[in-house]
Image 1 (cartoon, rainbow, N blue to C red):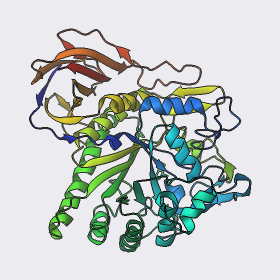
Image 2 (image 1 turned 90 degrees about the vertical axis):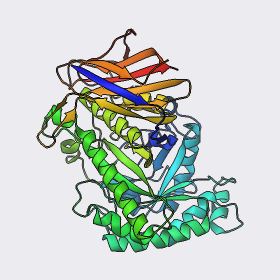
Image 3 (image 1 turned 120 degrees about the vertical axis):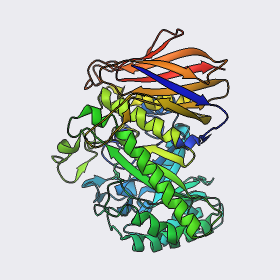
Image 4 (image 1 turned 30 degrees about the horizontal axis):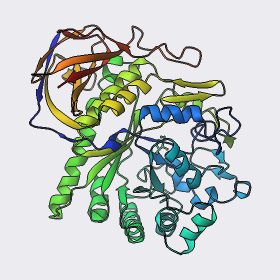
Length: 488
Ligand code: AHR
């Protein structure tokens, strides 16, 4: 089949915020313990961080990592993770039914982030706690004053403030599964007062208020309106979370997941602008899609985890090839909406629904590692407008899903096109317009005949990108992720 991409260089979508390629580490499963931190591992550094993991995180080029949750944060006392390690309390962790040893806390994590060349996006507990603890944590992390919490940080060995600039006002407070879940009105008041105090403590921080936990929450829409009406002036972003999965083993429908992500983003952006108009405000509230990924493979296995385990294998989805195509098309959607989505976090980074997996023997890369790495490396710059003419198909729920989904990024000397061919049968012969004076210099492809094929510790390179021959005609193979780089 044939499809055409027309590039409009003079009508860019937006400069892409580097934080679009963020990720997430929660105190959950083996993300922290046995993931980023394993003091008895042969690669452990002086603080117990696995250097093999640090190398891979740097390879991904993740600019910001959300921490410490997730559902975990809604029952977390941040002070438990500070001070001498042998005096830190071991606690029941109610969000995931495990035991938290607190051997890693904000002191260690901000140090890990430095070593990983990334920034911290910190979440505060608006479940069991509130404004007071949140402002104390901001003081602990960011202030240079001669006052109690800044001095507590110094006493713990950190003279210089951590300088954490981006903060989440709780996590998924719309969800009944959340520790101390709130109604929209309750959350809106709590978030607004917390935001005020946090910004009074450090006026340079940016804040993300909780939006809905998915497009399908019963309170979706009204939740956003209520929160925005109350908090508009004190927040900078509203969050979106959504996970995707091929639960019915309907691959054609599954490959169309990004259509729903696009709808979610545009609807929330519309609600932000509706409240902006209502308030006659000059300010625009943008979006933080701070949890997105595929998550469903591990659902059944997780039901069997004994309660109060320590760092169990939890949410360890093993991703197959079709998951990588979905992740690629979700990345394309984020870039195409980069005028409103300024922050996005692939949830998560290590072991827990993650691109990077660890074992004592070493690390291995999941299929989804590759599209994320390509987007993070080559998706920096300006998102350009593209017009796509493509044959389309219908799914159980959607009409006219284009086989070709793509985006183009101006990187300076190069333009990179990311493209997914969703067709399970047919290759696409690509026709390009608006690329005058540009020369294709590389074509990287991720594809596999078996949509369910995976990588593993023993077969780590089963799915990995290959370089296609570069010629005048461009063909996007059936079910493939493509990175086309053009020299200007
Ligand atoms: O990322 C896993 C979990 O998904 C997070 O803890 C929570 O915020 C979401 O429901």
